[in-house]
Image: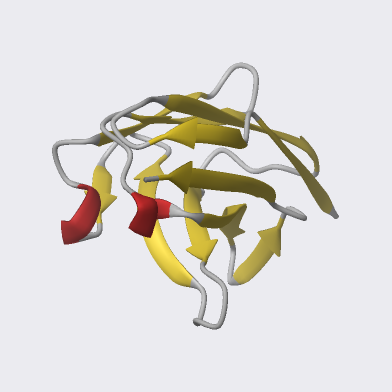
Length: 115
């Protein structure tokens, strides 16, 4: 089993920054993909960014140039630096780890961006 715990959400004004962190524990294999997804009120959960064990990254178009995903394989952590936040970035951000055909989710952390 794998446990994921997110931290770093909060309330910020448009144009501001937040940094989210996720710590993974349990049976974690060397090759995996970690990522962040978000769910806005009334909408489906969507991919924000992913990063592989070898640090290849992928971003949804709407956050390119503003968000940066990174990871520390020695600590099994993944972070999301979010700059120039917009009201449409508001939502619950969930950490995800995918390995060997299984996906694991954290409970999420709320990010609210006021206009």
